[in-house]
Image (cartoon, rainbow, N blue to C red):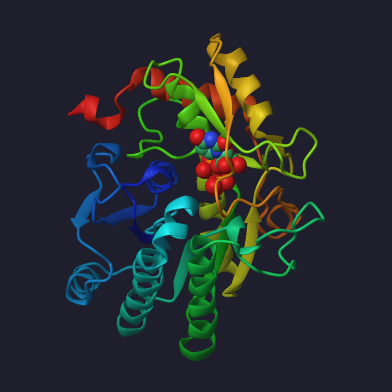
Length: 330
Ligand code: UDP
């Protein structure tokens, strides 16, 4: 298929692009490079730099390229930042989705796979979380993704655009070659932050809160390897073509790890002491998020091939090769 990958120069987008090319898709990338890195894209990919909220820019790309499907990764995705600046999240994530649907309608593109998040669920006692759980986000980031899901749901009703919404749990890890990986500035995610300590980029890890309602008091998350995630997008595209139907899937591993457990695994893999301290809670964090992935397994024929060790090892491999992120590649 000829795929328009929006946000293809970002962490998850760039891993998807690499896998899509391996699977013989033709790939066009749009990115405004506000958080993405041009260095993360293979040379053969056609790239348009611009913002998806810019109607004329989007119109031009759709006119130039005859797209079969969109794969939409453009979004701000930081819980903490979204609590401080919710409008930034609604502006980029929600308006971006509206502009994209408008362009799809105008240019008769029928299929889209897009990134949603476990943050749409909010706090639940019962685990694992299935797609039928109520959606009550505890932060504006999750809320903005829920709005996006609703935009696509009603756009299916009205314009017949078929979508797959993929609700990611915690994505981490890197490509096995160690050439692409996670590089955010500033970094806020647990695994890359932990790995910055043995790389001497920070003195210690601050664990945000140890008074959560979990077995060791620290938050529990479900980590999924970025390559397993990329594979789910390819399977979602197959599903859209095969079934011509919209759907929503969780993407997680069904295993929960507390922040302290991630730290202790990282200490083993990096063979480094990684000092840590307990700090205050980060506003907006639910206690526990663990996915049920039964639906994706059954309907998409997807499987989780990589575990937490693969995640930490591949992330460590990337960060050791790129201690200054992509800046070191320039
Ligand atoms: N976390 C932490 N210290 C950090 C960064 C993150 O304790 O320096 C915690 C965070 O509060 C959450 C977990 O690690 O409980 C995962 O956070 P992350 O930002 O990686 O992903 P999120 O769950 O927000 O998508």
